[in-house]
Structures are given as structure tokens and as C-alpha cells.
Length: 171
Image (cartoon, rainbow, N blue to C red; front, top):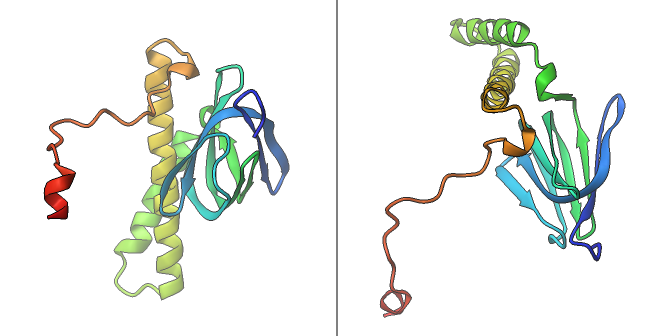
């Protein structure tokens, strides 16, 4: 861990280095759910699903990338992401994405689809729907003032959480 409460994060895809810098926090779309990474995180290897990578840089600015799956390695002072493909949220072509969604849905709606084609179409649909969701959230942020530091990605506070008495549970 760096002394100033940061860690290095490197993002690489098939075209080369996409991002490299110091971060205070990163939220990564892991296969089993989103992983929040702070300095000193326990070592971990994970597959990635299609989704948003959000990096809070050392200076407080936010970088947002869309990843199309890949691998994640976390060490206490460095995070490495090997992405299948990546792009900036603002570079998502919504018309192309909508067309791919329709194609995938058409394939899935057919009666006799070979299992491999069905699996490919299902993954394509998930990836393209994730792109649309990321793009819409980014656009909503832009309409509220355009600062990516205001990007609304944090989970809402829990409402109506029942109070639990741990001692009663032990009995």
C-alpha cells in the first residue's frame, strides 16, 4: 500500500494499455458481483463480466470505462485488469448497441438454435444490455451538470432494515 492511501491500477486490453495511474478506490464488475477495492485489499483473482469500471483517482477525479469481460488480479498495492475489450462510456454507439440487442434477441427467440449459438447470443445480449445501462447512467450524470465526479453509482442507503439482537441469535 502506498503511504498516501492509494494503489496503482493498470488496465490493459488487446490493443494495449488503456489506463495506468494511482487510485483511492475502484469498483470492478467481477463475475459474481461488483468488487470495491481500497488500498491494502487482500490478494484476489477473479473473472470479469461486462460492466463499468469506476476509478476514483488520487486527485479525486473519476474515470469510467466499460469492460467487456476479462481477468482481475488484486494485490495490496497494485490492481491489474486484463480486459477482453474496453471503451470509454461516452464512446458507446447506442444505435449499434440497440441493433446488436435485437439480433441477439432474435437468435434467442428461434426454436432450434444450436447450444453454442444460444450461449453466444445470451452473452452478447447481457454485454449489450450492460452497455445501454452504463450509457444511460452516464447521460443522466451529464444532464445533471456533466461532472463525472457526481456519477451516481453508489448504492442507495438501506431503508427499513430490521434491528437484530446478536445475543438472541446465539441463544
